[in-house]
Image (cartoon, rainbow, N blue to C red):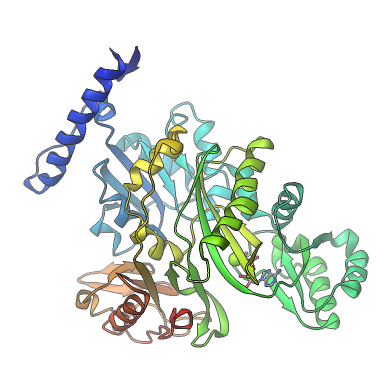
Length: 474
Ligand SMILES: Nc1ncnc2c1ncn2[C@@H]1O[C@H](COP(=O)(O)OP(=O)(O)O)[C@@H](O)[C@H]1O
Ligand SMILES: [Mg+2]
């Protein structure tokens, strides 16, 4: 016998009830437009396993999460804090900052939120999950995203290198230096080959990595990072590592701390200019699947990286419920880890979510309850391509406030809004990365062509997007 929503039931009764629930729920979901009230009573809420969900974040990644979660029969009310001008298509925007933990708490309690999905790294590294666990009223509300300790996989490059070394995970050889060991760092650089990679230890908004091609340049940069705080507190420690040659891709793992699911892999395009030229950006596009990540390569990734990572966390007593983003270099068919992130990627999520056919709320519930191994992950064999539309001037100082037109002109894509806001009747650009245009098609060529053509159907002053996203993979 088990207790289920305060009723004693045996397993057969539970199965019967679940079947009835599924049926009733599907029925109600399809009739939602008739304004039939769903379940208001908290016990009934539990029995029917529908959830009120809060997503933290406001970018294209969070739009893609919201789009996917809103399709689930298990999602009742969906909120996005703070969201953007596009997210009201999927749920309700809430004007709370992702690092305003007190504000999040009040909202979660007031609205009966049953699950919180954290989009960006900042609240995780700052301990939003720990905040929930330490609060009497919040501790039973699951947060998807690791606690601060696990988030150090992203929050500290030194921590993640040491973690990989302890767990025999393939990564570039490296050493870490501080201000006190600057002279040793200088000497180490003299013995390291070129090019050499310098990484600020802490979060540096994607700007803390330098690839130096001469010893003089490397020594100058190391000194600036350590003694002149070139990247602020983030560069009070610097990881010096060997340069890896190859082609990059991102692999995403969802874990409940015990078992894991490997989500669709993706390739992103970081440079502003076509042909991968110019300055680095937050991401100009993405494609999933990645043709050079064939079954043999992905098996190596699973055996040499994913399993040792999940087991390493467990062995070291680091709780981890959420996403592990593994940045990989494919060097002649061998995977090397460049970095971990403690959340999904943006714009990779926009290409990953459309390929997941399973109910994503069900998977997140598995993470929350530690039953991920019971869940099924079905991945579409189609290709998703995402083209990001950015603001004029980005990634430098960029224009904001332009009205966007053509959002309804899509022929075969979905627009995940990112840096947008509503101003009267208009949707205006407010961020560097403004929109992500994603198309899911049977073959890669069709997906790339459709997303690129549909991006061109949008207009705002200064708009820029790359017309070559993914074409190198054909
Ligand atoms: N060891 C390395 N060899 C070659 N390129 C690297 C190496 N480490 C980082 N890079 C390049 O620098 C980029 C940024 O490094 P990464 O560790 O991902 O830092 P972050 O994303 O936090 O800025 C990578 O995407 C990759 O292109
Ligand atoms: Mg990176």
